[in-house]
Amino acid sequence: MASGERRIGGDGEITLQVDAAAGGRITSLRMRGHELLVSRTADPLGWGSYPMAPFAGRLRDGQLLFGARRYEFARNMPPHAIHGTVFDRDWEWLSDDTLGIDLGSAWPWPGRAEQCFRIHGNELCMSLEIHAAERSFPASAGFHPWFRRDLGCGLPARLDFRPGFRYACDDSGIPTGALIAPGDGPWDDTFTGLEREPVLEWPGALRLEFSSNHPHWVVYNQRPHALCVEPLTAPPNAVNGGAHLVEPTRPLRLEFRLRCGASS
Image (cartoon, rainbow, N blue to C red; front, side, top):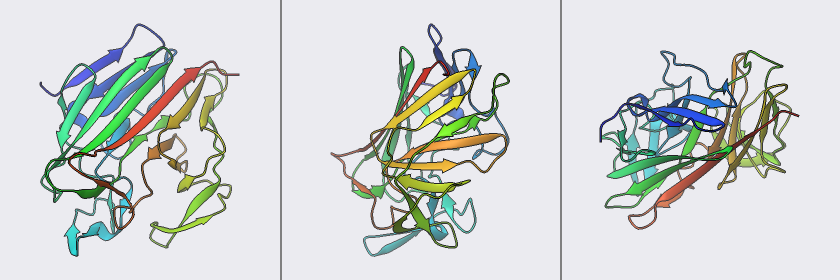
């Protein structure tokens, strides 16, 4: 099926637009009449909500060591590579709610990624799968939504996020593997051990609850106009030693659920 932009939903509280040609990203997410995402910009890293595969977050020095070989990737956030090989390439619609893409010539192993978007009442269910075609390889996956701080009504966004631990990072922003106290932020960090599911609320407008089938989250709240709450299958750079091993009979699957309701 062709690439292009499609609308999903529209009969209830949730409507989204997904553009296959813009990295398979959500270009618009409306809940209860409010647009939640940062609109299109020239920077493919900074708007909408896009999939990260076959690695999520930073990859140290654009290098991946696996099976005694070293592989090099474009350093699109120098000195590191970031967010995988599919967020700025054309996807293909496989059905009304599912897209697919090969992992590209930059990735050393044949494989595919698939996304699915489904709406159930007041809940948006998103999934991202990474499939190996022939040989096993390390991988991680994530979703990167850019939420607006201000919806144009009520008060700015307020994040209720209660992690147990933060991954300590070295001077180049790469997790060391050590877990430390979360601290107070602002953050550009990865967390785990949450006490409860994250909640993003725009007082007077909307309440949004998040959940994932993996325990790792990135929060980026250092911009005045937007903040990011990102589910990941593993911390950044985990493909270098600790990430999931995708096998031809065992894909990696990330599920991300967003449930909307009235603001308290």
